Amino acid sequence: MILETPLLRMPALGLGTWPMKGAECERAVESALSLGYRHLDTAEMYGNEEAVGAALAQSALPREEVFLTTKVWFDKPDEASFHAAALRCLERLDQPYVDLLLVHWPSPQMDLPGILRALARLREGGQAKAVGVSNFPAGLLRRALELDIAPLACLQVEHHAMLDQSRLLAITGPAGMVLTSYTPLGKGGVAEHPVIQAIARRHGATGAQVALAAILARGRVAAIPKAAGPERQKENLGALALRLSAQDLEELAALPGDRRFVNPDFAPDWAA
Image 1 (cartoon, one colour):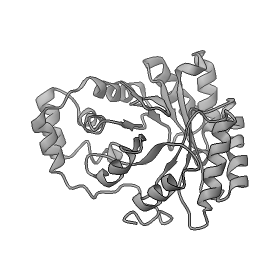
Image 2 (tube, one colour; image 1 turned 60 degrees about the vertical axis):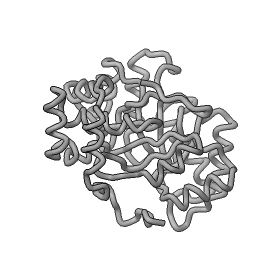
Image 3 (cartoon, one colour; image 1 turned 135 degrees about the vertical axis):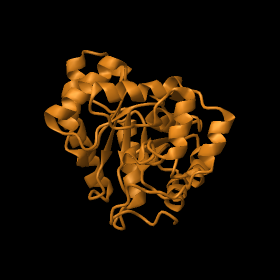
Image 4 (cartoon, helix red, strand yellow; image 1 turned 45 degrees about the vertical axis):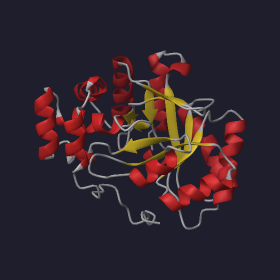
């Protein structure tokens, strides 16, 4: 399943690599690529860009066949520091470009126009094919779009069957952006929910497959579940073939929509 907009073309299901590092991360990425994954997600803060880059090189796949995302940490709050950090990401990945470059988290010190100028420069310079933001609440995302400095192609946020992000989707949809869901399985908590387990039994599927299919059914939404081993990676890929019924979707929509599994003390005011 490929998501396509005027600003990017990305596989809907990718491999999240947090918190894997070193040899474990390299093995996981090599396994995923051998199974058919063509979308990899990493970040400066993960400390695994070298491993992701090494696995990508080892695969011998043509570079243009793999969609690669990385993110710059929030301690680079201005144009110059963000731009320099993004170039260091490329060095660690040993890549001339990434397909998507994101601001990892907003911070109170962030110079938003400066950060957007850095994103625009990196895109224009070819170091990033597309750019976007991560963990921006609705108000800040609207402000970034209204500034119209960089063509924002993607918003990456926590999103799963128990965390409704309709408010953000109401912004990303009209803006032509993709919403990428991280922690789409809620660290296992979503897949084990009784409602999701019941739907899984009806389809002869797993809870994880139902949880992922529920996200992908929303339209211009991608998911990047972390999976270290080939069996779990295969299981997650199986979500692409699962078609949920109207009854399934109705039952999923009735789940509580306010459960966060990622909410660090530096997180923004999500209601802002």
